[in-house]
Image (cartoon, rainbow, N blue to C red; front, side, top):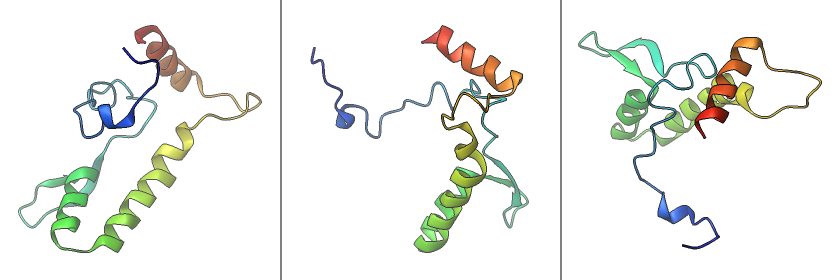
Length: 100
């Protein structure tokens, strides 16, 4: 086994067991959106991105992911110790550490 990590070994593999299984609940917001399609079905961020991609609007799809990064992912990035995570977020991080 190699000591180096090769991104191509995991690229497009089904590795959503942590983030897709609700393990990040309380740390990252849900992917559910308050937007419905023409049949009244709720969109998730992923299903809306897929619809936008099918419609061929790459700029709108990019904006959607930029919005998700800014509003959801950015707050979960590492930060300086002088601004600690809330108790709820720290508890989720501790669970990840235990798991890993």
